[in-house]
Image (cartoon, rainbow over all chains, first blue to last red; front, side, top):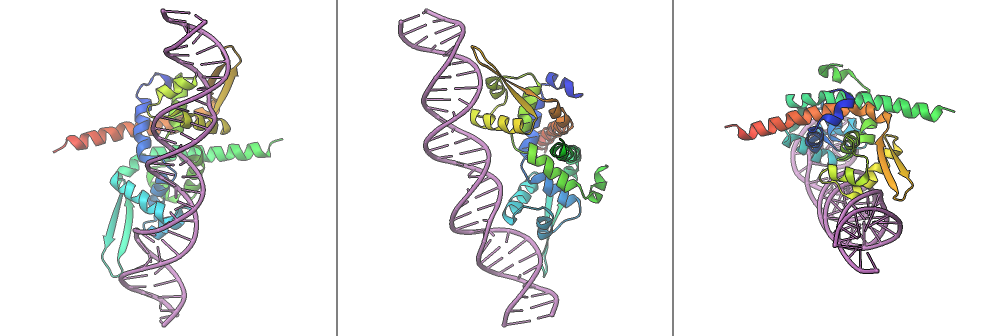
Length: 118
Length: 118
DNA sequence: GTAGCTGCTCACTTTTAGTAAGCAAAGATA
DNA sequence: TATCTTTGCTTACTAAAAGTGAGCAGCTAC
């Protein structure tokens, strides 16, 4: 669907709502990317996402698990080892992440450019 | 960038953060779509987005204005007429909206399908 | 033994979202 | 003329979420 035809599409708002109900928020997509980029341990994920707190991470991971985007695995130890991984279904979010990433990249350029202009 | 190569891209997390700082949240993209689909008046937008309140809409519109995604225009009356419109820059978000919309569409199908399975 | 790491949780404060009401200016209805 | 409605919000209040800092059990490393 080309941008300008958005006006003709009655399903946009409801579908967008459905998507946002699952992935909106400051952290969920960040966590998915962190997982996808090889961070599987709680502390590891936490460290890889600047600004997130243990509390929020724990909560978001639970949410993502419920939505079947992430799986938590406990390998009984000792030491007990907890691992998180993105489930295949989460890969369907790649276009979203990609689009957002591109936009973020561009937006930063715009902001930077604007501040250095006469 | 193909999905599986995401792990190689160090700029993903920061760019995603930049994007999310502007467009994350329950309502911003919904509002942009509402505007893009022809709703220009405050009440009109409010009615077209189920569940949003005047307070939140007013706040979000201000945010969007600050980020130069939306313009507010007052035509002195009487009656005074306030109009909102998406600025061209907001069109750069179309890929994001499109991706989310598609995902939402699919996710709903998945949820629906899952609940009707044996 | 004591210092550190892991994967969290708890109590608390701060911020944000949501709810209901209302208000001034104007227009339509009667 | 009265009152009812619509518009574009704001305000006061409550509820929910996010952020902060500490802490804890279980283990390892020194």
